Image (cartoon, rainbow, N blue to C red; front, side, top):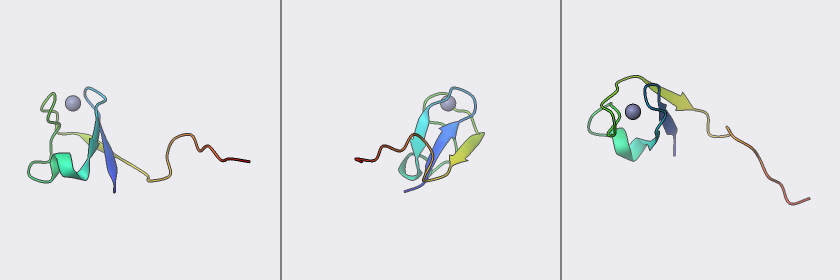
Length: 46
Ligand SMILES: [Zn+2]
């Protein structure tokens, strides 16, 4: 599932959060950054 981050408050959002309205449910910000699915630190067991 794609993830988004609010540009305004930095909240992490999912598609589910914004499926009705494209905006941050926490601050109402309308600028969302789509995060690539592979973003973040990858931890691999050996
Ligand atoms: Zn926000």
